[in-house]
Image (cartoon, rainbow, N blue to C red; front, side, top):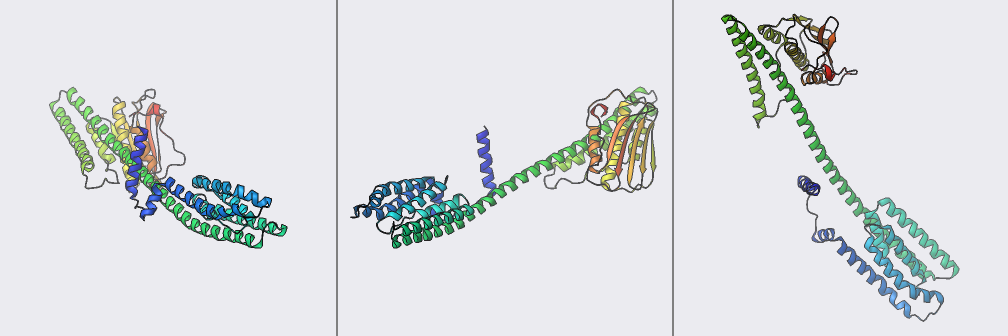
Length: 428
């Protein structure tokens, strides 16, 4: 299954890259059949190297060096040509072998040469690196020149053979290196471009996944806030209507229940309508929450002793205003759900010069009971998104307080010293 999946991913990657076909029929053939290309090159080099060396064995010179050359030269040339089969995997091996053949040709009775230096210098530049090709070519040429000079001074070779061997190695090696550097550089450049394109595809997919995950988290927070608060108010109103014997109060509670349900349904339809509309993009800004006074008024209609105190200026950036509204909504909802016997639920919003403080305190919650939920976790994420922090914990006097401090600037950076909500204290 892993192999099939990786193959399909590779095919999809190639389709998305939309690479053009390599130009030229011969170039496409060599690219698809590298072994055939290496065999043909080996046979061609073998023919061009053995044919000039064949008459040397028939020379009348019977000196020991000529005899050794006549015996070793064909074997050495064949072995060097065979190493060309590994010029892609290990280009240094045929390069060293070709240098050995050039050195061996110094002992030939007549000037001779082979195309091995051209092929091996080209292969070294293409399949290893430009630096290695130039260093190898320079080292081999210097060594061959030094050997030729020493043998010339010792009288082991003639000036004509020494010059021919060095000149052949220089010309063929230089041409092969120059062509190989050009081809190898282009090959490595194209490979780097393709690799970078693949990286961009991967990064694009990762960014899409991160954006989708962030959008899912945002929608989950919005859905939780809408459903949790509205259903808590509806349950409280319904229980109050069922418990009272006053028909007027029961009717008022039923009316308030219907209004709360319609409001929640409208918000749900608005959100689902955005998600179902394929033509319009998802909004980057979250849905506007209920204002703090509307949340408090709804809780008061449900019969809860909720009070609201606002001090300072109420002009806030949209992100901070949204966070304040959701914090008040979630805090009041938690108090209604977990402190039904509370005698006072105080909501305080204080606008300072640099930040805004939100506090929701009640005297009916127990500090020993806690559940893991998503409400306060979502509020912690909202507070962190605007650079603030939030704490929900018991305070002296038998009360439970949700305390949040948000900067007025609404920075998207995380707080320097965040105080996360303990899982055991989360009450939503």
